[in-house]
Amino acid sequence: MANNSISLRSLLEKEKLNDINFPDWFRNLRIVHKHERNEYVIEEPVPDEPTANAPRADKDKFKKHMDDMVDVGCLMLATTNSELQKQHENMVAYEMIQNLKEIYEGQARHDRYETSKALFQCKMIEGSPVGAHVIKMMGYICWDMIRKNKSQRNDKIKVPSSDPSTKTEIGRKSCENLH
Image (cartoon, rainbow, N blue to C red):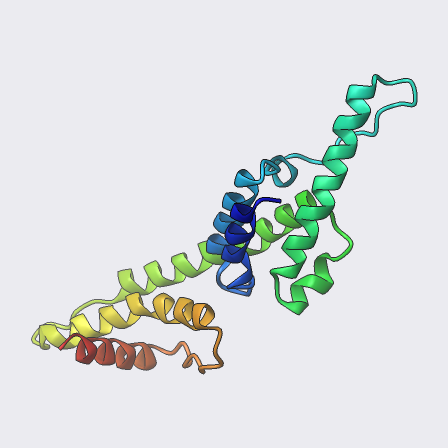
């Protein structure tokens, strides 16, 4: 492997897959394996093994796919948290990606739905100050950003409860940080 590959792999090694960073992790995984010319392993299911009398080229192609599949699968497992490693250690790379997509893309869709729902239900009370309403709205919008920052920093900060008053406080603190 070239030195370029090693430096690109550091994209994956600096941040392990956890509960909230799947889109970023998956994008980095695709970049690394596109560069290494083995992205097909995460995009295509395992091919059928060629028969004993198949042409040598078919057997070589199958062997390369299997070798690449092991390399990609090991890198994927090495760049996930221990819980995900246990869940996926007996899967090949393609199966891991399909399973992770199913888990995390549904979760992200649900999170966006909940934020949108909260924003659409957030009505300004007649006669109340606009600033308080803006702070409340910012709290809903910033909520996901705080969760993302927690995963990217890999620290153990406590994400506050999801009740609306907490989100309003988050919005207020966001405004204070802007000044």
